[in-house]
Length: 283
Image (cartoon, rainbow, N blue to C red; front, side, top):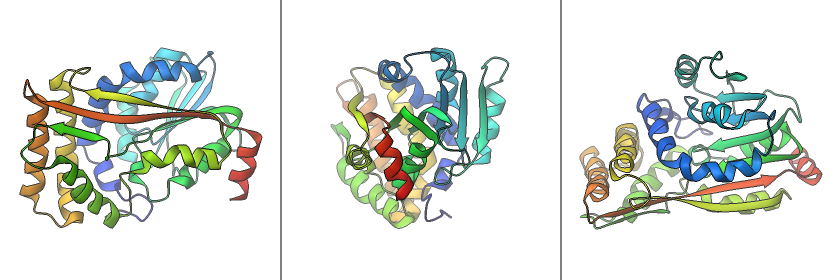
């Protein structure tokens, strides 16, 4: 059962999540990497990957940007075991994985130059707690980076069922009842403004059937079905077969030659100021 803070903990620890994160990275990384270069503008940075899952992006950061240190932090020990099995420190220097709660990060103030949080905030009920902890552990002048999912930014045509209704009513109701929120993405810029961060930048990664191989994009939605269909059914009150049929509908749309599917993902970066630190400390 989910906790109040981590409403999607059960599917996030599902075995299907490893395949989900790996497939998503293959589709997303080519578009995401140019925006990360702005942050990783020199070698030797100390990096915290909050909600690192199975370490897919932590490992890519090590290979691509040569940081001094990357610490992957995740609540689920099962995810960290998979990460440690896949990414040997001998091949990924400076990379380590620790169990920890993103709302109470165990590191001291100003420990890191960069803190990232990807594909996680939609799974928690109070994302501001995670954001403020990230502000605390990053030095003034350091960077925050988010992939802040928003499930009102998925579109499919043609479909048999109403895909908007599926994510709004089925997924949205399940999220509400479990203590999470599938529309945090649209709120993130305002949250960073409230913290008086500087250099706030929002870009939208366009993961669609024109830019990404159809089979790869469809595989993402197949993994979503495997990992989330029972959770959505349980917390939305909708029959499992109905949830599965809705997933199958968007998968078929993605695969058909005349179908169009798009997943827009807000890619958000911001720089921490002294005022940001004060606001986070006093909250």
